[in-house]
Length: 322
Picture 1 (cartoon, rainbow, N blue to C red):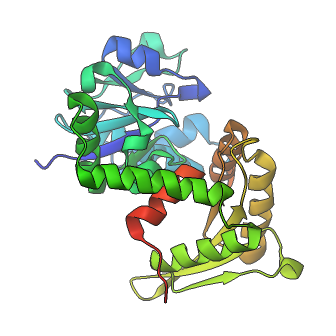
Picture 2 (cartoon, one colour):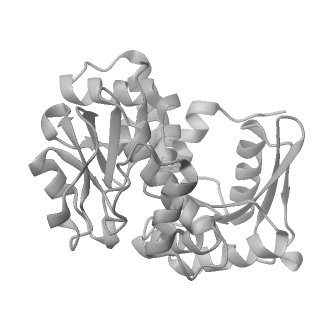
């Protein structure tokens, strides 16, 4: 069976359980009161119904129940021994574990919302891996608004991070050059020949370089909460609109929840499918929480891209000049 990879946020009931997971050599997920999910005879609909009855019975649709069931289904049904799990406790670092056994249920842990677990072998000697080692695509996936996400397409990047951090891999000319370019790009973003309009134009250029069919800067007089609207065509037919809020800020103070709230207005005014905050600065925990709450309530993701990640995007993908 081919090796898979997943991103997992271990914070059931919004409580950081990563220290416990590291100590007990397990990964942990919530929804502990939904008993019986280990029954392999359950269909997807039956599996989802158990979660809906316990947690979302008052909801008028199945969106939140389906989302929660999706996270649990991946954790219980789709993870296999040998798969890699990236655990993201904080933005600055992450851990990687290798699954070593099936999911279990411990009734004693129901009150802690940690009854569902899986055994893992923590890699890199249980030491956290610095985020700065990761490429921009992995950084983006680690910010997923949800509990458990697929990351098999990033397996090579995850393995590379482990190798670099665990072996103290000697930097090469290429890695040294890329690191320096990212650092210098970030410096230019924050203190070079750049102002708010120039930052919007730069984002427009980068987004088009990443495959957008169109990226339109919204005039200030027509601004409803989004600075840029980017359109991507999926499979040449499905139109996906991304509303982008651009903030050319220094690292302090970090982007706050008010920026996310402003973007939400733009998402809804433009009927966008996705939102992005792109800043040359940093992102506050309050902004992260606001984005997660919007995803929980509306099912629309807001990607939060800080200066370091944006600099990596520029260096790794280049800037189209024509």
